[in-house]
Amino acid sequence: MNKLNLKILIKESLMNKLGIVVGTRPSIIKMSPIIQETKNRKIPFFVIHSGQHYTKNMSQTFFDDLNLPPPDYNCETVKEKKHHGEQTAEMLVFVEKILLQERPRILLVGGDANTNLAAALAARKLKISVGHVEAGLRSYNWEMPEEHNRVIIDHISDYLFAPSKKAEEILKLDNVRGKIFVVGSTIVDAINQNLQIAEKKSKWFNEINLNVDNDYLLMTVHREENVDDRLKFEEIISTIERISQKYDLPIIFPIHPRTKNRLMLFDLLDRITKIKSLKLTNPLGYLDFLLLLSKASIVLTDSGGVQQEACILRVPCITLRTETEWIETVEVKANIVTGTKPDEVLKGVEKMLNSDRDWRNPFGEEGSARMIIEIITQEILT
Image 1: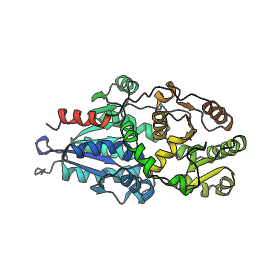
Image 2: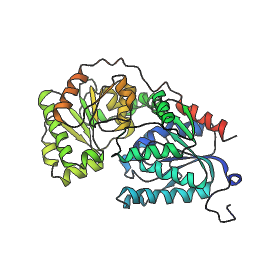
Image 3: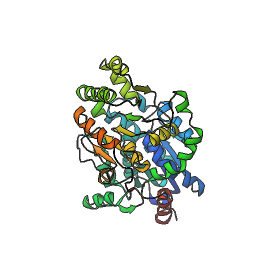
Image 4: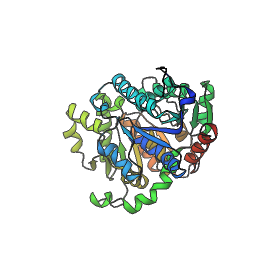
């Protein structure tokens, strides 16, 4: 292997196998159908976990719920890093060492987290083909770290797996170098494969004494532009207070570790726990959250993944940001982008509580993972 001590891998030294990278809750979900499809076809593969989401309830729980084999490689040192640059650098070095050892023909990354940028860069520098699952998303907010990652990954990928025609159009306008394939969304696969399992296995509703037939609102907030900004975070809390006053509905809020940390740092925890109808919970596993989302009256979120999941499940969504990378969800009227100002959010809540749920799913039918693996097999692993 690499006997000339080169900084790159020679094409002839690559092995007929596939590398798959995960590292965050959304990436585990979106890559799970690909892992299952690869496993079922007996294609040689390995899974790298970057360590970006490293707590059990943000990572291991999802592997258990989705019945996935444990990752072959885990980066244990990322959790010691604080800033984007050092996190990304730590993951890049870790992934590079594994790629030099495994020498796959292609590495698949999914989404826009630092995990995916680090892994894509590592593969690109070694001359290993890069496949980007969920390519072509744009929020056009250059302040978002995820936007930088999306654009860079798309431009250094050899194979771009777009979830929709809209994403394909964006990639063509961006003049990317790689091959573009419209394959739909692997999240559709994940939901179709797991919703019935969730309905049978999830006991979470019983544990908190909430009837699944009751109306309730679901809320998730975790993005740094919201929770790291005290003014915006206080606007969100004011919004919850006003929703609680106006509607006689429980508000379920699974709380992200970053969000909980900022509540304590800004001395806001006491205020939010006093909201009568608010039920704060720890982060949920995939099956519990999937069932919770599927039964909700509406969801308020700043998560890209939850916007997409809600659209597929036909749950009206309010996005607590000024833009969205999931433009399709707005176009089909499944989603309203309101920002964090209480008046605007309240208008959105009223509208979406009274909305029809008959929109068209813009992300296709089940089968995205199968299409991706068939393309990879035909293009590379032959």
